[in-house]
Length: 617
Ligand code: M6R
Image 1 (spheres, rainbow, N blue to C red):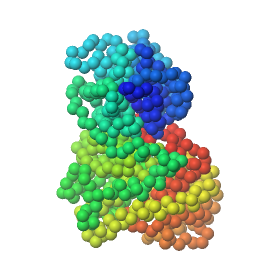
Image 2 (cartoon, rainbow, N blue to C red; image 1 turned 135 degrees about the horizontal axis):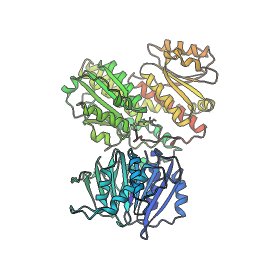
Image 3 (cartoon, rainbow, N blue to C red; image 1 turned 45 degrees about the vertical axis):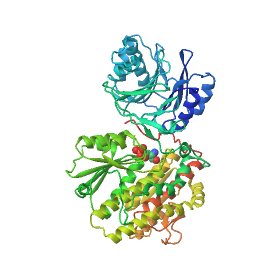
Image 4 (cartoon, helix red, strand yellow; image 1 turned 60 degrees about the vertical axis):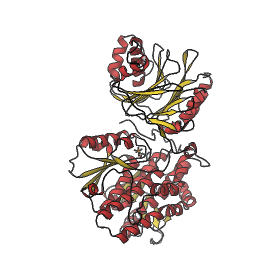
């Protein structure tokens, strides 16, 4: 949450920072702001709303300086107002700061600062932190350990801060310098040619440089245009590792698509190919993963898996649970990461933990992972963003390799998680009772996934027409069974998050235990009805809806025959192996949600109140 960009170099800072902020806008879009150091002072522009509003505001300020910081906000403390937008400048005018995270003890700090004569213009915790840095900066003698007074005063301030932060700071009497520090909120340094950048996400940096350093929790970096150094909060030295970003700026651009979500939906065949590339054994009978850091023997000793995640990623875990239990016969439990952490679940001695997270920065998932590690368990991560906090703190893991996902509604990351979950189920099953020939068939089926998804995408014009007919609905049910129950949950989540239609996902047969009360001609039900052993049971559930005049949108496999007139709309998907079915069945609900949201005029890529990666509890 919240996008952060800092720049120091030869170029005019403001346009570069605002370009970066546009790429980060999916992290929060309540307000945006930029502060530039020029003519010996900070020039500040900030505005509620999108970066486009900020650009208009910034034009009035004539921002010409070569050093600056910028921010897009997802409000936590204090409403969505210009005053609460970042950057904040200390009341003595010496410090400018942007912040992602929450300072939990800001109230005590504020009380103290008021006694020292500092004043406040906003309701934010950030402004308090900014003033406290100014307080320490004013008092700080020149340190003897070679560090700058600027770095020392930030270090001292953060020693008093409880909570989470990713911050970038400028000091009035330290021109050409940026100080940045993190605890719980991602920050990446970009090392360019005669310029340095810092951002909360690689996408804001990659147009300037592919050389990056992922800052770790508890580290402080000091940047100038040509140099940087990193120390720890406790004054320790850090030997920085410079990484190379493997994707380019084009990967994070929309191209000819109307929205990132549309682009990412249609990218799924390629994304799936990338997610499985090089991950099958040479004999073609099982999956292989490079970075699990766990031996086959250790895997065989596991008698229970625990999966933790949030939102869409949790739905992918639930499908994985189904497949591991079905094929490998190992018990799996899934939990909301946010609940796991506080629930004090009794755990088994030979449990193995997995967390799933597209961003690798979701704070609830990170906290669940840390809790499991604290209890002595190994934790493996399935994660898309390379170098993310979760990827770095996990004992091992599997990267999704689907490139940047920008749309707030997760699509290609989700289906690649489903694919990796299926590969994991295969890998575990082959260690146990699955035969060579069943394994070979499974592998062949997974390799078909990209083409089957291509075929499912051909239904887009048909689904668009259906979307037009149902776009005015106020409620919708999504109903599926077995591995498609989590896809029903996902369909409901997708629809509500981007179109603001109230939607619920249920196991199809459970619907008659309550949700059926919602059924009316105005409340359509989306049914998943593949031709499998419980097809007739799902048809019976459809009949119960039909008897109550509820419209039915049926997603059926090509070989399924529905009774005449039962469904008002039929969307056909290709027949496929049951491990691939959840992937293929996700496509129609992604498209349906997308087209309904477009029809309703919603801001598909930036739905209200949401942010792409949720880095506050
Ligand atoms: O980055 P993560 O996978 O950890 O994100 C978890 C959820 O916040 C995320 O999946 C969210 O539910 C999506 N907006 C759904 O489309």
